[in-house]
Image (tube, rainbow, N blue to C red; front, side):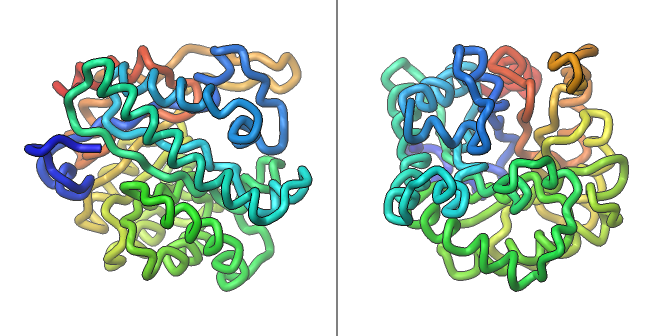
Length: 309
């Protein structure tokens, strides 16, 4: 959803300046009282409480986000099948994720938001479907061809729902990146590729310059970067992505707080600061937001820092 005078594509907007991305879907849903302790995570609400997802998207648009990411990160045919949904119903739910984000954009306009708004359809890694934390390790024991076969059907459904961009996100290793880059070919929808990293390497331990280089010549890819990582690891990654690919960089790290699995609480303080946002932009980031534990208030600060929203 864009105005008549604004860039019609997200790619054009990134070429013209910096765009504000939303924050974490899961923390916004949990803040609204929804229980996400399920293998489907936020994707479960596509079937049970779709209006809650629309409300979460709307909160970010009203906070200053220009782009919202759909609740399809953990929505897969295999994951829905485990819960008894047949393939047709699973496809409907995956496509619904885009429709709910579009509805939130319409509601935001009705509430007075006049800037361009875009929808990014999330495609999480294979490990997200396993729901065992392996998306932060990668190296699942599958070939690139097998991973491509896993990703392509869901990407076809998402692309047919006509989002503005496909968010290939939280990618832990170069094998999965190669598979995703193959899987988006010919879909007719642009994509961004975003790794989850630790220090100066992918979660699987590969150098970031090699990882980013895979997308340098991919015509479908309009931005490359990192997400779901510590804020302190994002700056160097942004600079590397910009240098290696020459493409706009996307960055949306976590808050920096740490999860205590034994106590089941978040500890520490947020390291997601305005100073870091400014540094990411200076290093080449053109699509900036947050991931886990980054909520609407933080996105308002991002928009204010960037002079957007």
